[in-house]
Image 1 (cartoon, rainbow, N blue to C red):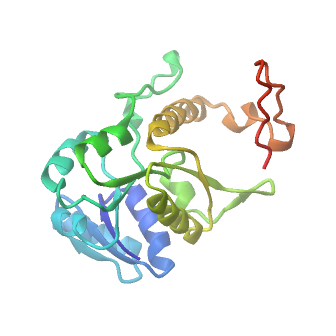
Image 2 (image 1 turned 180 degrees about the vertical axis):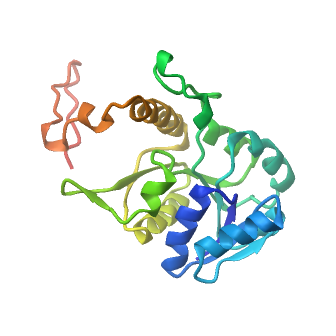
Image 3 (image 1 turned 135 degrees about the horizontal axis):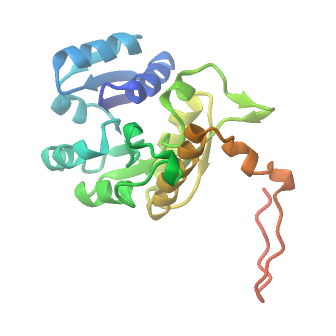
Length: 230
């Protein structure tokens, strides 16, 4: 697949590096040619630097790996380019330097980034993915923890786009899980703020969630809806 990456930070390098190693063609766009060249060099495997406009119009899918405050400018400038394109949103609406341990960690600067991206780029096939973990995890060698595969949740309304991003997740040796429509992406964004805040505070977020086989509940409504135990 031909993938354009907007952004030259750690997430762009981590995901781009894995996709390039898997044989995908990568073009990286950044605000400066030096930043794009440095990111492309780190990604390797033939990744090429470009302008943001060139990367936005390149290939079959586009990864938005830019700070949330930069989104408005990008969406306004490339709205028509993004029409009918698979647009992968890995952003989070909180900044690392906004950590406040006395209030529990991070807060969200806005409640639903992926939905705003979809509204700002009509026709784009937006999929929220890769936002729950730091770039270092995606770039790292570990794809299994305590015998359980590292999983990435995907939210999107276009089933073909979700399937395409699921394939890209599998290329990174991840287990993709379709987690609902784009309206559920806001829950992924809130989860990222909550869980990363716990990690920064020094708590093990995973210890708050039991393994699947121990996570059970009895429906408390009169309809007696069964749980999905796949």
